[in-house]
Length: 573
Image 1 (cartoon, helix red, strand yellow):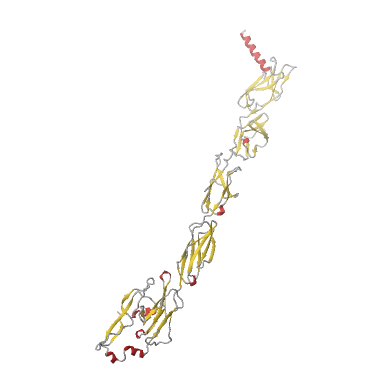
Image 2 (tube, rainbow, N blue to C red):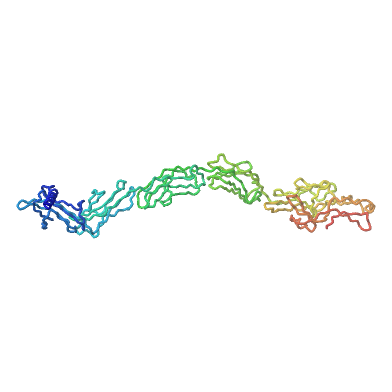
């Protein structure tokens, strides 16, 4: 009784399965996804509603003698084909529609390659199916699937996705069919990302940029695709400042006014057309106002006539270009120049005497109006003395005692001369009651000519140039004598008369000093004079200043045997 119930349950279950079809139908039961893979178990059934019937199986219209409502086994390369089943007895047969069974090959392997491996927005994605070895069934179309949806079928093993979008991110596979056998690649997941965040251009200094400062640009961006290095390019007014590089900054040299403009940066990467542009940042470079200029002279403020003089106008700060002006005594603009330097040199060649005077300069630029002026600098031009000539107010060589004699030391050229007078090669440098010098020393005035004033007169003119260089020139000689009558009268007549004056005082000498020792040489800064002895005659005659000389005074000598006769003379010590 128990065995009968069990058989009844089995028959009832069989009736439940086969009762789904009144016409025979072949279905795949295992695997459940109905994809039969080589090397795996599979099972097919012939569905029919009559359990009491005969079953026959056909593959490619050939009976292979299987007499069960199921057909199963382990799939191999020969499993694929067109399957059908037949039910019933002769002559009442019923045959199902054929079911094409395609098996998935286990070997060889179909490989799907994706390039680039990490595509960016806008990239072209290439998908390629590679089969090793080639299909033995010849060329068959490839099928391309996205999320299990067939998107393309082509005999070409390579397809592309142009200008990738975010929606192109998906799972992909390719298949190759060879009638009842196919090769299926592994699924490849493709992710499409952006290159980076929107770049931000940062400019330093942020508020103001002055001429001479360095302009620093930074391109700030968050990188999304770490497999590729970001490349940065900086632009000014849409023109590239450099080539793409991994540096995310750009630094100028000292900023110029021409560096003003609109700046932006661009982020790219190698082997990709994707570009990301930053915001535009306006940059205005401002000029720096000039500082008060300084005026210097070279080689100094004392210039020798005929030499070259340089006026140097400079300042510590100021943006270029700078406009320079040079002014002379009358504040007349004598030179103008616009330069990109903070120092300007104005050169005057072959300086003449009339170039002496006060000079100044001014500077200005776009940020400095009106111009700023330097302090005034005085320039002295030294003309070496030359062409000394001694002239007299009388056209004779004999002067009577008591007469007035004026000697003039004339110069052909020379600035700020200092004069020295010589009588018989001895310097006359002291004023007495009989003579004096003019204010500038060029004139010797003898108010009352005396016997001891006779002799050979000569003058020397001296001046100094830059670097304490001394110039001198010596005049011609003038010999002055007195008539014999004048000498006799001044000596008191005959020698007999002299003997009568033995008790009288010695006559006064008209030169107050005789040579008694050495003194300092001439120094223009203290208006000192050098005195020459007789042994210095040649030097004095040539106008050369020696480093030692003698002063003089009166010495009285009395003739032996006649104490009454006293004679003044110059004593050399």
